[in-house]
Length: 360
Image (tube, rainbow, N blue to C red; front, side, top):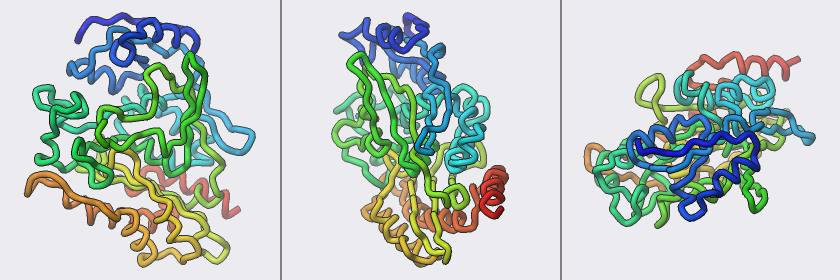
């Protein structure tokens, strides 16, 4: 690990000033440090070499609180564990708690922050091998992943430059719930819809997000969710082992049903299939007014996956992801209809609490 300067400011203004003291090399020269669960790994692997870390642990950005419109505000420095356990999150957005608890290990969730979760980099093995070319590390150097081992790689939204996937579970649920990311810099503050926060690779796969190098994530906000989402939501995660593995395919699904049991509103977001959480409102619109069932869910899945393409060498490609993703969408929507919050079971109590309240 290369030597670096370590600052610990106690206010947002001081943090922004600390970052700004290295304007000439800001993108690589100075970085914010929160939980460090990804950044420190990248530094130890010599994949990034910041010369200054602005440690933001002391900043007052941990609060989780209701907003006047009935939504929720999540502090950027609230840990993933604290967010998943918060009563307001479990009560209003159990889908978000389920997604958080599907990710990482308890130890990592105790360290990882909400803001940092949004910024974690791809887990593509070619990206993490500094001896191999990688357009995401060094634009123009090449992408051996396209013709190599591609089990974890993208089937949607990829480019000739990059087929990496975004690894977060949290972000898939945030995308389904229409979250907004709020950031601040010395130039002022702005809000970025979750739909626009992460980028598709195009010809700049080195840029994961629309966050500028001098901007600090301060909090996330969630709009009020339809009442049915607390009862009819699922986070389904398919992975190569039962614990602590990134998703091959994941689905965040939520349904709002009317008095006749027909679908009033639906949300479907996919993880593990693209450079960003993948959502298509046209696919969700196909479910409006329909009775829940395999036929309607299959049509939505087909529309959501339209244009999906496999990549990789024969025998080690990711063609299996195409039928897997289709079946996962159908299964997630079926689980959501039945009020099953996960495909693993340990969070059943969350769904039960929402159901009890609705039935009362």
